[in-house]
Length: 70
Image (cartoon, rainbow, N blue to C red):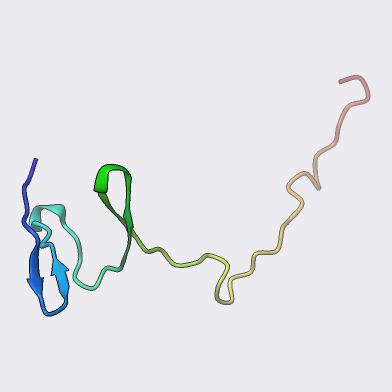
């Protein structure tokens, strides 16, 4: 387990994450304050419903023939 220390920079508190966590510079996180003051960082992911991706549903069973006695 790695220990880090919060430090004050301007009006903000900063916690530096170790290089061993392999986090790319510029990665955005959502920050939550959990039970007993635990801080949780969740990487921000792109909304799959934004943009121009074709999200039209297709009929996967279009070519399937069902038997009468199944």
